[in-house]
Length: 420
Image 1 (cartoon, rainbow, N blue to C red):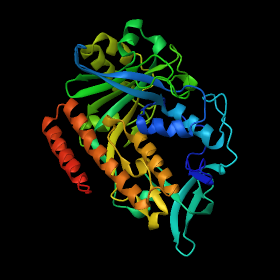
Image 2 (cartoon, rainbow, N blue to C red; image 1 turned 45 degrees about the vertical axis):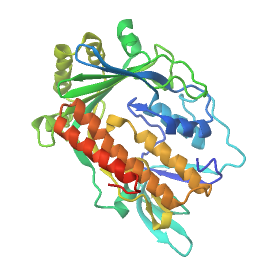
Image 3 (cartoon, helix red, strand yellow; image 1 turned 180 degrees about the vertical axis):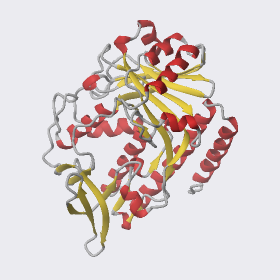
Image 4 (cartoon, helix red, strand yellow; image 1 turned 135 degrees about the horizontal axis):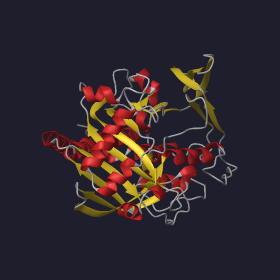
């Protein structure tokens, strides 16, 4: 967005390479992402698949709720390479035809292997000095910027500089994640997910599973969106090439033996937030497969038993009380500002909304103070909504009632311009 408006943008990225792998993790989008892409995405290939309905099913697949709920679905890799193609023209198998930069656009620099270590205010020049170090040789450097966006994720260094007391809190449940090529599944199983987002629940656990037919929408970059079939290798949305995506939620309290065991990898290393692909102990995943064999309906069982590369995320959250610093010269955005429990699938929407609103600020249509108020209100309401869903489907009804009351109070307070 900033480059499109004519600003020079320099990104400092900790990862040592532009080649990234998001483990094919599914991403659901919504109206904010759609609005952002319609204005700023100049790629032509379809990269989304569409879910038209949201369906809740019990253990034997009885439908308990079904309602229209159109949503676009993609995966991390596909969206990353699409955004990079638009930003700095990164070539990849995900985007066959790179978009051309406009004559009035700014310069784009994507600087890998650089970690921000400090920010220094330059009040006389109305700028900020960004100090960083190289991840490869620890050499230091600095940049001077008019505006700094702290988009450095849940473990944000930028946030820690200004709000060191804000810490991630484990929410006492994990998500087992995995994908299955739809060509490995029976036609009956694929049909169950076609054009639907399915919430399937057992006792004290539930999972989200999507599949879909790749029909194109009116926007050339958006195919039918939101099932948990997601794009396959290199972003393909062709039926047969796509993936069925699984997110399986289970409660494991912090102090439990089970949590410690599942978060310890094959090398004996204890992980705290993500246990990556290839590192789950075989006996741990075998127990999950046994649950599927003993308790799940045949189509669900078929999907779980065909997951070859599972990984685990320990779900955590936090909420920052402030988004703008140094008179609006430093902004926290995305997960660096607030991290939601994944039930609402709103992290990508949060970033897109912040970007759309920031565009208004850059065009002098909104003040930084208004931007901050709106993004904080969105973050607060979303953070309160997510535990309602999770506690309900994981059978913690007193907790569900607590979060419902919190959400109602927050909603009423927002009408008075307050965050409660």
